[in-house]
Length: 221
Image 1: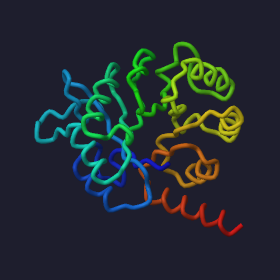
Image 2 (image 1 turned 45 degrees about the horizontal axis):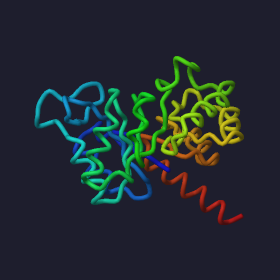
Image 3 (image 1 turned 30 degrees about the vertical axis):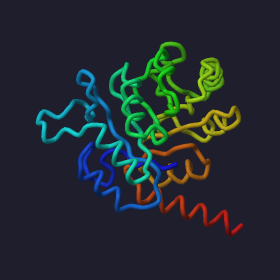
Image 4 (image 1 turned 90 degrees about the vertical axis):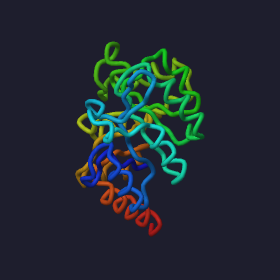
């Protein structure tokens, strides 16, 4: 799966321009938005909610956009205790099957996933295991399995932790990975060849081309 990082191709994070431009690109699977709460309202914002109301985009707009265009969305949650609000809104708009979640999620919130996939960030387990490293992947897999939640799809991992050894270990133990934010060609090629579950990138056109080339190479074998 390929996810166009928020603001991909220089369109600006959490902007209408981003949504409009992504419709012109074919061959990727998901967009990405940063979700913040103001009371029970869900509004897009990376480091903060925009000051001017005219610049604020609500999650309801995004979910309607995804339903209309059959595009998946990565909801990157910037505050805990947000999963239920996202799920309730998605249920109302018929978008639940299009969502995967990353970001700040607590263990008690996984009961509210109910069909929304979760790739867990290190904030979910850092106090217990530290950052995701090759030597602790097996323990992380055991921990996630012990939660008995089929909506947990794997780890959401920064590219800084990725190496061939890391990828080999994750594959050997059956731990799926979503990797962010990967913009350079060599790392994109490595992850596409490895077949990780998701790659999030600003360089979405290059990623689409590399994935297409890889599929053609497989056909030609």
